[in-house]
Every structure is written in structure tokens, then in C-alpha cells.
Image 1 (spheres, helix red, strand yellow):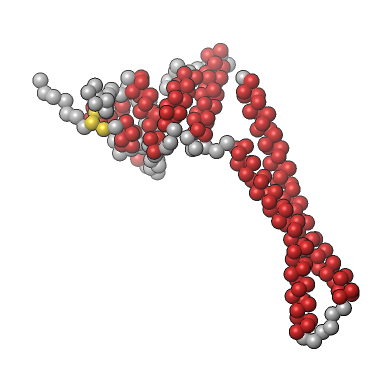
Image 2 (cartoon, helix red, strand yellow; image 1 turned 30 degrees about the vertical axis):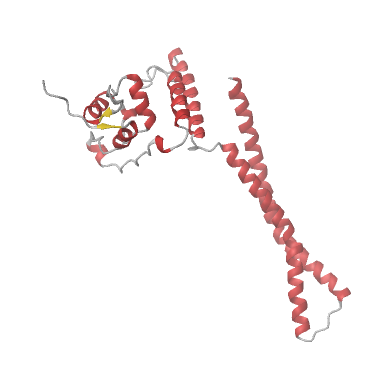
Length: 244
């Protein structure tokens, strides 16, 4: 009896070659789509790449060099960018644990047909899919692949706050600089300056600069108010989701 040829590789390498996510390989092993070598616990690429292609649905297709079953239409499309192996990202244990939870929430026919609309099965499918999507987003946040929108808004608001303070201080600071230049020019050209009378000129310079900066401050404030409202909406949705 002829021995089966082997090319033993790690799960991460299998994911890289097939152009799929490491979590897909993990689930494939758990579901029996991929068999591990009993002695080494590694994957025999020569046999398992064929098993993967035979068992995969469209959602399991990869972008790696081993995934060469292309239709004529696909050949005309631009190449799909390669997905980096998840083992290059920290917190892999968190990723695998949450992947199991995602699988538990997904409908049983996740890889098959979607139930007909306006049916109890379809409603159940939508609810379970929504939960799975939320868990997947949580997974990406844990791995640093996704930044929550509320955190992005918080950073932007802090930046706008600093910008607003800087613009508000601009008239006083700039007016003093401009007056210093004017005073030095007058002295260098033999022009006598009456300090009491020049106070009105300094005020006029400051007021002119303030008029220019007021429109900037108005725009900044408008953006801050919009972001504040959006942050409040996110907070409300987050509380509603937690209750569910």
C-alpha cells in the first residue's frame, strides 16, 4: 500500500497559502473540514487543500495561490488583497474564543440559503446574524483591527477643543506681535510714538484679528456640536444593545 505524500505545515501557513483568515482554519479543524496529522498536530497541505476546496462554500473561498478554482468572470476581476495571518496579531486566544461565540450565534444554515422573508425562520435568522455581527465587531476591537466610533469621536473632540483654545488666544498674541513690528519700524524711521494715543491703534488691530478668527471659531463650535450629538446617539444605542 502506497504511502500518502505529506507536506506538513502550521495552521498559520495553511491560512497564508489559501489566502484565508486564521480563524477560518481554526473553525475548519473544529468542524472536521481540515484534519490534523495525528503525530505532529500539523496540517498535510497536499491533502487538506483539496478537502478545503471540495467542502468550501463561497464564503470560505480564499485569495491565496492555492485557491486556483476561478471562473472566467473572476479571472477578469482585480485580485483580492491577501489577508494577513491572524497569528501576526496579538491576543490570538481572545480571537479564537470569540470566534467560537460567533459560530454559536450564527444560524445553522449560515453557509446555505437564507430563509424566506416574512417568516419566523427569517426573523430568527436576522436576530442571530445581528448578534454574530456584533460579536465579530467586538473581536476586531479586541485585536486592534477596529476602533470604536465613539473613541474616534472623543479624539476629534479633544483635538477641536485644543484648536478652539488656540484660535481664541490668537488675537491678543498676534496683536502684540504686530504692534511690536509697527513700533520698531517707527523708531527706526525716526517717527515719534505717543504711547497713550497708540492704545487705540493696538485695540483696532486686535479687533480686526478677532473678526477673522470668529468665523473659524463658529465652524469649530458647529463641528463640536454635531459630534457631541453623534456621541450621545452612540451611547444610547450602546445602552440599548447591552439591555438586549
